[in-house]
Image (cartoon, rainbow, N blue to C red; front, side, top):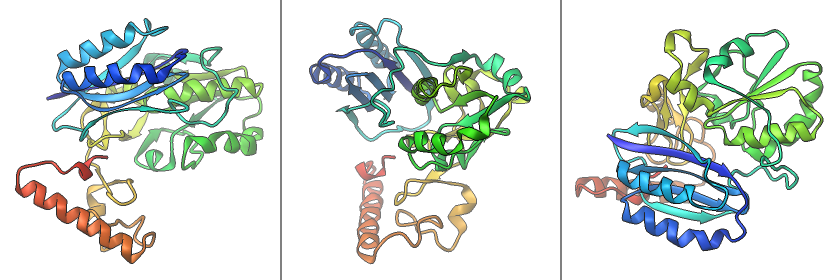
Length: 302
């Protein structure tokens, strides 16, 4: 099995570009693939590969300014979940587009997976899923509010339009690994919402620790790699990815007449031009040729 490591940390990096080269060198030397994002506000990423390579990377990151308290989550994959290694410079390590939001200043109250169930069952608590619509579609917590956002940038506008619905309620929010809630809870505090909580470690930590018999989670959790989804115990889920629109597909979706492998699915069948479809078909042809040679085509990455 291949070790997968998800990590993030908010801290002040005065010169993120200076960190990029040593990180990429260390990852490549350790046989790692995946993506690390660097910004002035910190580091975020998911990587996969040999455990000793990941351990060396984590030790290096913990030695960076303000990163001694770095937290990470391990899971496994049966096949390589990434095609290559990338270390990218970004304006934000998770894009919300709100320059005044700073999780280093203050965030909501944390709830452990063990405390989450009892808290969200209370009548005065509203549970909000901060993820994108295609993620929510394959799994969420029982009774959670779905903002139907296509990107995290849309969350502030959604809140402005809907905050009156949650007057006199306590707010509990969650996301995949916890990073989006660091920003969304700080944002709500800046909007005057004091009683705001979030699931520490996100859905991934909950699925890792919470027995399925006691779980309030329904469905699977979308992940941004070739596994596509994971379930309880972080077992790989049944989903595949549409290579055109990048949305997750259930096994039965592959039997629908609109589905063409590598080209389109029922959700995007009307979204692309003939020229785009021709390009997708050529990409899929190259994928099949690479597989026939026993190679992995770079276009197969999620």
